[in-house]
Image (tube, rainbow, N blue to C red; front, side):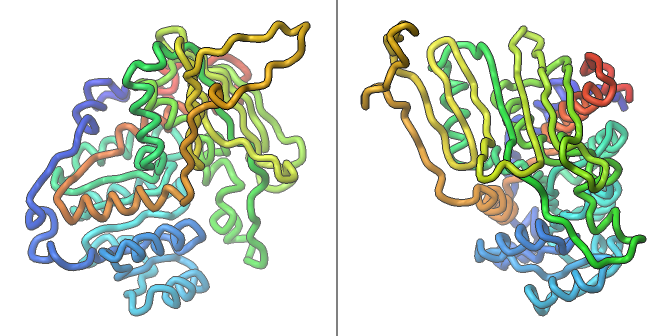
Length: 387
């Protein structure tokens, strides 16, 4: 199999939804609640699992975790779920779907098992932590049952208001995209304590490069995925810087800046951190076009499309009048709800998708940025494919 992620492969795998009869997808259980197995009873896994239950059309029928305390917590929340300690047993259980929320470095192998078991899959991002894992995931997705839905936790792609903003950009109302900037400035991460040293890199996987892929792969892939989605393609090269200004735990970076370039010459500036900002938060993406700009985030979007007469700098800064204010749409809920609800509804209705190729494209983008930071030089998309 070619290591390159071609545009043809992307379109073939994710260019549209395949609609099947529900009984084809779920057999005789088409009118009952989905039986979902949860792999990974950590913070994110339990959060996602709760959203599955809240749809009213799914139940957590099984849980799996290697640690007893986390299994106990999962059992308390989702009793009478069957409890497993081995992922292979969960993959082979009589379930409709598996929710994979284990540490990212484990996901390629686990996805292979679940897809081979012909289950529907909702897999948290990132789907892998390196290029080898990306190739492994992509190959498994290519062999997966086409009647099964494979979704990835890039929830922006499913958010109702994100989709509205995407439609504005794609409609041409803003003209060609001239420049992009995005950021994830939000503060530090929670730290688990009180466990044996032998469990450290699993319990606190999000703090280590080996298990998380570093912050640009684990956290910042969300922004990068939005940019790839809105642009309809990926950057072709990147340069970047990063370091550890205040972090003394683990080995991940705590801040970074990256400059990307697309094949059409559009530049994309990105910055992120994971240290205290004392309440300051800036997480989102801004697309600047020939005839306007749009800022997107999980809280909604702002669309700047008014013609404004700029005030000369020597006369002071311009103050917007009400008619010049951007159109604003607020999103008052966690858009992960949209992603989970669409997965459950899609499985029940026979609307399947394979989101892996697009997710892998965003993983390669993040890995390209990481390699540029680590090496201190420009890194190309082609180089990342060979890693």
